[in-house]
Length: 243
Length: 83
Image 1 (cartoon, each protein chain N blue to C red):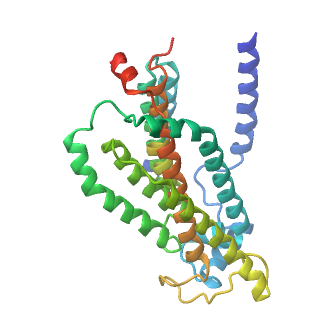
Image 2 (image 1 turned 90 degrees about the vertical axis):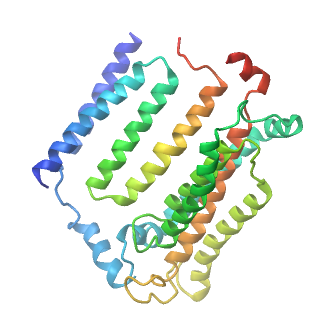
Image 3 (image 1 turned 90 degrees about the horizontal axis):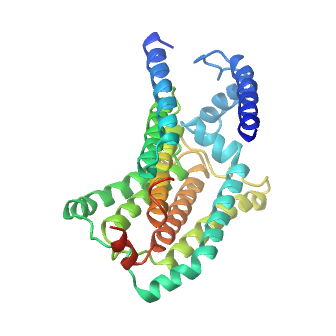
């Protein structure tokens, strides 16, 4: 009975989705209509931003991005507060994350790759207004670099004090840039700096600044989350028994 | 959109459905997690083919790397095999 209801529900959603997506021609270019056309025309002309996605995310829909960053911050805080006690217990017992050391190949490759991964992440969020990518993507790439270190070296752990500071400062930078728009005499998150030339690194006004702040914030938050999750593990004795 | 891209997308979509069904039915949870990460990888290739490189980057970083690692850590702390 339960399965039947679930099946009917899924089928209903499937039919509804089909009728919605059926009206969109498959693979056709629908960007040239209405609001999409406005964004595509105005982001190179007025904002001098080559990547239209970035200009939508940070400028036209900047307030939504501030909301997204806040959601991520609340999620990190909640996870940290739930797992805080187990992390403290873990630190006191000084138990290792894993019972076996990672192989030498992984460790040496980590030493080579991690700086390159962090560099790629920084590139992605600094050039967010020129090439695909941006603050979120760059931050996640940096966090995967730290994850590599966490997996390769079992003694490695992240100091949460500077992480919290970076996160708070980056968030305050985003909100502060938004508020500066009001003090200048315009609206919240108004693009008050000069926009420069198209395809220049220093173009787009406050867009690169906001994306750099978002990049730092996301990288710090995800690094904190990963370290917290990886540091609560089964004690060493239990793992050895299972193997 | 050319015919070749359409054929690639249709074959890839069938592969995605097959991988998803495999992930649901597999009792070994680590293998199921790897199957879901393969789904994310193919999806990110799709986004790239369909000219959304921003979304492709996000999917590759979050779907392939972060989610898989978090699932594997959680499986290590609980049970590997489903009853």
